[in-house]
Image 1 (spheres, rainbow over the protein chains, first blue to last red):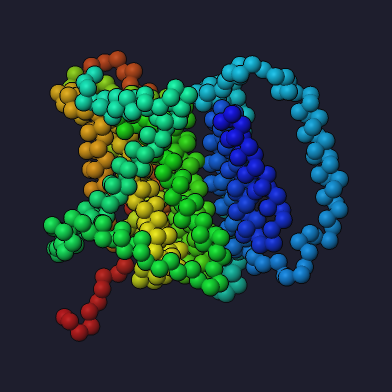
Image 2: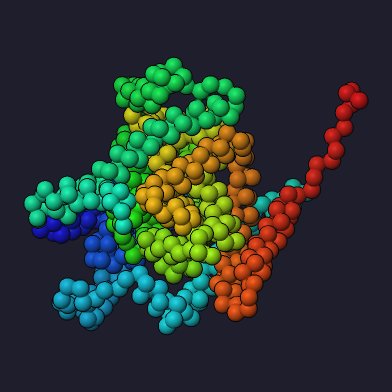
Length: 173
Length: 396
């Protein structure tokens, strides 16, 4: 009973956040609603006893990606849609096939995976220690590769960010 | 295990025992929440008073001394003032976000206390990934600060919020990195396991706290600096910058909402100090074997109070930094040093197996040197050229 109530709360938070992120007119509100949806999703993971995934979701999506979105909005443009203008872009119908394709892929993958089989409660238990051991033993090469990729991306971002002031200096000199 | 040590646990069990069996888990959860909130809200009131008194003492003045004996009731007066003050919301403010921001800031900060071990058997929830939970839940406060600054529709608020977020993001990196050596050597993310790993004694009497190792000492200082910056306290309080951007994101807040921000800042500091005690100062363990008779929660409280005193001391002593100095300090000094500290911890781990006698001092000196050399070199490299000696035209 308690579990159902918690599930309903988290699920409605996630859904409401996601819908509001699409429908609201103010970009900052949209970003914050998306953050709310991320938090709801994290709560769902935690309720499923997937501690590591849930906490990583909070740490990365609420702590980093939402902040990134907010910063991008603040640094690039005004936050108001002109009154009277439609919130949908003129090419909104392009999204339809893309959305349908993604949905088909996800449904196909989920139907093919064994996760639909009803396992007895507690059959799958992945404590943080087990995940850490797996990451450090069996999956250490993929982990290193991801680390390398992210470091390269970080350096690239810094390089792109640094270029402008240098050009400006050389022009003024 | 003595009765006194477990007095809160036993009382909690006894009280929860009155509830019907189905509601017992809920009852003990509510009890734990109520205790944490009551204790740390009281701590907040006492700390505001102690801080003002100590600041006064350090700056050679009296501090508050008018309300009650020695100014003891000053927090009560402050609280009443905050409660009955008019709540002003600017006309052009985003009303919903302006209302939500203090709540979004305060709730996650309280949640962070759920995983801290305050004494033997005194952890509200013993999570596998306790420290992960601590940092994950804390990341919501950046969004709250943004909400507060942006919804006020005031340029000072927005500037203050941007400063605060830049600072919090920058210092979160060294904050998390400085805790990694502890996790590596304890081999666990659970705060209870980390405390247990520090529970043995070296030479038969001195506790094996992490702070007694080179990487632990360096890590504690890195952690404390980053925690000060995370909670926007002096010398890192320039998001508030009263003299330049009139309190930053707090400009348009008054009354109880302002009080909530104030509370959030202090309680966030308490959570940081509690984590510092747990990770580096041995949690609730006694410092020497002979003092084990004192209850574990008392040891936690003493260390906690010592760290809070350190924070107040730093606030009284150090001047405020400039924003570029602050960010440079984070990225060019704190982050490299915390990475170096990881290497030092690795060296400490591998030299732990040295078989010959007298290895301990050599090991200590080697690891300390591994940290001190980069520290010295980085500090020199960051200082830049010294300004030329000042010339006085008329004074000589």
